[in-house]
Image (cartoon, rainbow, N blue to C red):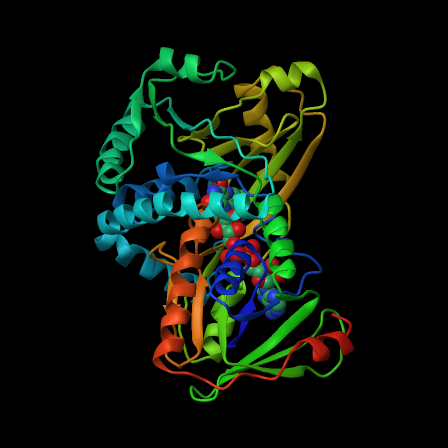
Length: 429
Ligand SMILES: Cc1cc2nc3c(=O)[nH]c(=O)nc-3n(C[C@H](O)[C@H](O)[C@H](O)COP(=O)(O)OP(=O)(O)OC[C@H]3O[C@@H](n4cnc5c(N)ncnc54)[C@H](O)[C@@H]3O)c2cc1C
C-alpha cells in the first residue's frame, strides 16, 4: 500500500484524504490545529455556489477595486503597506484578466461537477451538515450591476449552469423576508448551502473510521523531497519547542490553505497563494420572530458583496469582505459592524442581540483557479488555492487529485514507507 501524507485538515485536505482512502491509499493527515476545520473552513459563507463562479480578474472589477480602496466600509480593503508577495500577486491578478472568460466557464463546470461528490460522501457516511437545498438568489439594486450580471450569465450558461433572471416581485416571492429596492436578480435553483465545519469534521471522523491517521496538533515545519525516494515530513507537537520528528511517505498532497505557498517553495514549486481575508457573523436566531424573519433561501447581495446561508432552524450566517493585509487573523470591529448593520437593514425582524464574529483567510491564487496537480518533483501533489470557492469546489478537486495520485502510482510504483502510527503515538498526537 502506498503511504500518502496530506498536509492540512480543512475542507480540501479532508476531502482529499477521503478520496485517497477510497482508492486504497494509506493516508496520514497532518494539521497544526487540535481538530479538523479550525482555520478557513470554520465559519464561511456556506454557499455551494456555481452561480458565484465568475472570477474577479476583470477590468470593471479593477476599477471598482480602486474606488473601494478610497471608500470607508467598502467590501474591499487593501493595506497600503507594500510587500513583494502582495505586489507580485496583484500584478499576476491583473494579467490573468486575459483568461477571465475561460476561467469563469471552467470554474462553473467544476462547481457543478462537485455537487454529486459532496453529497455522495455525506450520504455514504450518513452525516448531515445543515444542508438547505433551496437555491441561491442574487439580488441587485443598481441597474448597471444587474446588466453586468446578465453578461456573466452567458458565461455561466456556457459552463452548463441554469441561472434564471427574476424581477422584484419574483424576489419577494422567492424570499419574502428580504427588504430592499431591487431592480432584479438571478435565481439558481440547483445551488445549495451547508455548514462547512460540520461537513469537514464529520468527514474527518469517517476518514479515521476507514483507517486514516489524523495527526492533529502536529505543526509541520518542513517538507523535503529529492524527487526520487518520496517525501519527508518534519513535524512537532504544536506549541512545543522540541526538535521536529522526521517521517517518510511515498507522496504528499499539500492542502495547507494559506501555508501552501511556503510548503511549495520548500518542494521547489511556486504556488502563489495570497491570504485574502474575509469576515462572517453567525446570528443566533434565539426567538420565534427572528427565526420567522430570517431568510431560508441563500442570498448574494451583489452591491454589498455579502452572502447569507441559513444553517438549520436557529442560525443565520452572513459573510463578506475581501481584505489584503497579509496573514493577519484579527477580527476587526470596523469590518464586523457592516455585516450586522446589513442584517438589520435587510431583515428588520431578526434580532442581532446574539452574534458570533469570525475572520478567515481565503487561500487565493492570482488567476482564481485552484492549484490541482503534480509538482515538479515526483511524489509531490497539490490541491489548494481555492480562494472564495473552496467549499464549492473541494469535492471535485479532491476527486481529481486522488485520480492523479493513483495514475502516478500506476506509472511508477514505489516502496511502501514505514508505518506512521507508532511514531505519532509516542509524540502524543
Ligand atoms: C468569509 C469567508 C466566506 C467564504 N464563503 C464561502 C462560500 O460561501 N462558499 C465557498 O465555496 N467558499 C467560501 N469561502 C472560501 C472557503 O471557505 C475556503 O476556500 C476553504 O475553506 C479553504 O479550505 P482549505 O482546506 O484550502 O484551507 P483551510 O481550511 O485553512 O485548511 C488548511 C489547513 O492547513 C493547516 N495548516 C496550515 N499550516 C500548517 C502547518 N504548518 N502544519 C500543519 N497544518 C497546517 C491549517 O491548520 C488548516 O486547518 C469563504 C471564505 C471566507 C474567509
